[in-house]
Length: 342
Image (cartoon, rainbow, N blue to C red; front, side, top):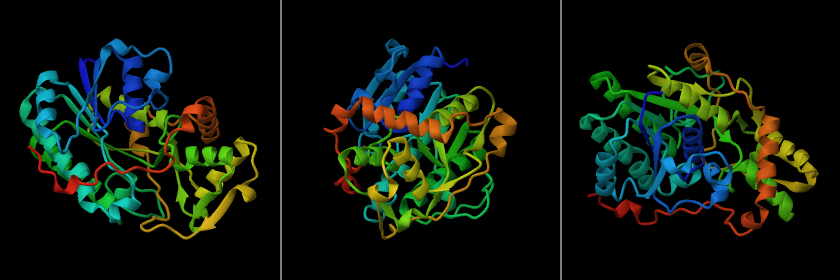
């Protein structure tokens, strides 16, 4: 890659931290990370938890994209990144019904501000936006990149709106944007309230794992390293527009939890409890990754069984710290809807 500097928004989050890690290990780029929160504990940051990342090329800035836009704009104009990888987003689907304005402020408004400024500034070469499979709604067949959008939650609608805006920039101004849609991304260093790490933690605590709707919703899980590999392949050439990264098979959540139980040596029936379905749960996501295969020579390499083993081992390795961490999502934008950006 001939890029000098990459800026990763949402570098604290699961995918963002893995993007930073890959850039620090596999490229010579200077990497700047931003997040609305202080830099996370090293157990959530592969570039700090595992040796080999060249940390002298990394700088972190605590900036909220929505409420601190003036500071973010100043950072952008100072750093002048060749590449922006935009990961920052609110992503807890169920909560978006209760706080829709927060989701549109962060996922849509902030994306528009960021991309519009980068378009006009003159220094940007590539913009990679992390979208979501949920923009398509539930599906029974594999969804292609040209499929119509059918969001069924405020979260999905906020992501779809951002995608549509970015496509207008690409069509009208040749904005160098690539949009990334993946199914359920998982792996070590993930937020503890997500289904795979949460199951591993609850098994150690002796708590019941609740299966919403009996765990019948079907999901295709893709390992975070495979997604990041796809992002790097996108950056490695003139690849624009939308790309899907997904496995070509899926499984009910019930079977996902069963595999975690087996990996941890626990009895599935004893460890789980069926409960009612959550609001806005789409029954199935299924993305066609044919374009990524043809144009990027991309294929997933981490098996689901390997990924689950790695995640359980990561929980075990950091158990003392895990036991001190909150196990439920903590919303940090209680007053966000009333904020007025500079």
